[in-house]
Image (cartoon, rainbow, N blue to C red; front, side):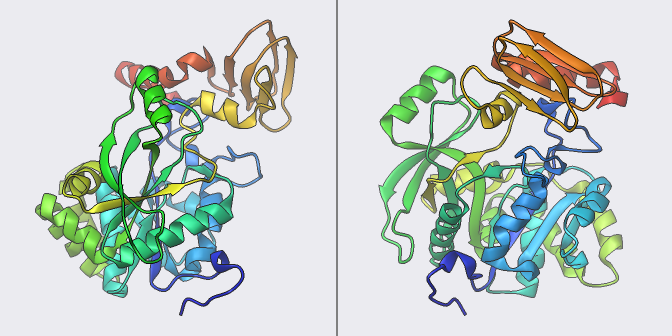
Length: 377
């Protein structure tokens, strides 16, 4: 049972299960992030642990080890196991191929619901950086109580500045929900705006950054998804029914390839919000999805004119330069008179750009795929 203590954040919540989707390459962080060693397996927070391990450690006080499921690609399963030795083998969902977040989160929710019909599930990405963890825990606790009242819940981040790198959540009316005093109705989700529009959003105080965190009863989440995508949910339930049996591999191999690829934002969040069934808990903790090298520079720079340096045994010389250098080679990297520079030096690839163009690295990766330059991806 949930108990009352002086540190409620340290008390696991009844029937709360965390889903950690550990997928995606993080192509805007190429050549640091690669297909065989993606973003969530890097120590980007600079604390000696991978982003995945940090996510696990952050969720443990809320769920305990028995109530965490990780969804990842088959190729990354060994690395996930190495990072999370306490993860129950039956709680590692291995995706044979990428199918977007609805399939990964939906399957995990369906498996959890069979094991615990009263389950409340929360999806938290493996590759985000969060500070002020006690504030994060408090926000999740509010979301948990709102989910118990049959809402689909998201946690939005109070913007610290205008940003065109994130999607936004438009706040609606306050909602009176026991245990969730800061809950607001979600008026709408907004795709990444340009900087001018983002400035207006932040000035209004009516918008939060969309961090992609979703909390709901497993039954409610799957019911809402089924209303939009009935064939997808039917297939996911078929896989889930076989998960704890010796038929798991046969059913997974047969059903998974035919699943629709769709993000949970489109299959659940946006239609539920449009129907008035979603609330948001504002999060006042530090958060970053580390979406590009500009974000990484912002996290590690000591000041506006600083050159952040990441990597073990780096050899970097700087004269009147700012930005970020990430070095995974033994070469000496010298930067002179460059503002907001981005240099990423790895044994087989070198990236040089600026913070202003950091989002365009993904286009470079897409070009390499078209050209067949797959040996460095």
